[in-house]
Amino acid sequence: MSSVETVSALERRLNASIPQQAIRSQVSARLKNIGRNVKIAGFRPGKVPTKIVEQYYGAQARQEALGDALQRSFAEAAQINNLKVAGSPQFEVKTKDQNADQIEYSATFEVYPEVVVGDLSGEKIERMVYELTQADVDNTIATLRKQRATFGKVDRAAQSEDRVNIDFTGKMNGEVFQGGEAKDYPVVLGAGGMLPEFEAAAVGMKAGETKSFDLTFPEDYRSKEMAGKRVNFTIILNRVEAPKLPEVDAEFAKSVGISDGDVGKLQDEIRRNLISEVSRRLRARNKDAAMDALLRVARFDVPKVLVDDEVHILMQQTAQDMESRGMKMKGVSLPPDLFMERGEKRVKLGLILAHLVQKHDLTAKSEQIKIFIKDYAQSFDQPEAVIRWYAADPKRMQEVEHIVLEENVMNWTMGQAKTTEKQAVFNELMGNA
Image (tube, rainbow, N blue to C red):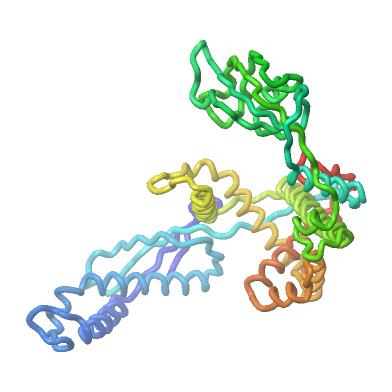
């Protein structure tokens, strides 16, 4: 027999018992199995007396047998009581007497909430749209040209897009601060390598000139020691170099991956890649907008155990990402609080998606998955090879299935809400603003 107590909105406590005999039989079986291979000084393998094996391994065997029995008993009781268990239970064995007929225990755990998604008809959602233009293709080629520019010395004042060679000294309260001094330092003006005010100060200077100016570091500057601080810089301009952009010809096309140097193919490939990237970014923006609307109207508690698990995953991913960037993370403990809000949001969205998919049959259909992969593959030189690559790995197909599923939920959500189209700005969409 078992009983279930309600501890809080999602927390439950199951009280149940296990026959002692079931534990004893499992302990005996485990000790017998251990005895076949265990090595104990003074005995041949397989010939160690049962009593000796029990002395060495009895406690371990009982703990393992009890743990398995608790899990089995809990699973059976959860099924009988129709409990949708979230995460793993915390067991407490109440019977300490190993001779008792029954081992009483309690298991504290959380259950999945009843997901309630409210009325979306009052929610306003902007669906971002964008139609690629020839100007976008031309601007992308212009950017590629700038990235491959060569620089030649000129005898004139520095202007935007020039590369200047400078010496600089930065002082705070009359003292040179760490990282505030360099010689023969190259700066491409307007490229964002230095603070905008610093680069602007060099514009108009000629080789051999010196300039001093004050500058206040932004409040969100990467160096906390300098954030918000006002300093004085002195720069000496050593040399001005003007950019020379490559012509858009066969050599240029080859430099960006067109093996035969066909400029027409270059244009086509850039267009294909931009269409694919714009589509991906629009989908991500619109999905976020739809998910935010769902979060606003959803009303239910989130199991803490699931949030804790998600926070742990986020911490691991962040640590791995930081290590991949060259940071030493050994012995570094990231604060869980930094990930709590994000973890709760991800868990809540997962529960909402699962609820809506089941309730409104929004599963990713086979034909949808095929169309998604086919469209994505068109941005590659060999689309059929990309399609085969996906089909060869079930994990890759599952990833696409999840993307399509989310898109189904997004479209359903926007169909329920007050959705208006908004023309995206290309540079903002691509993160170039």
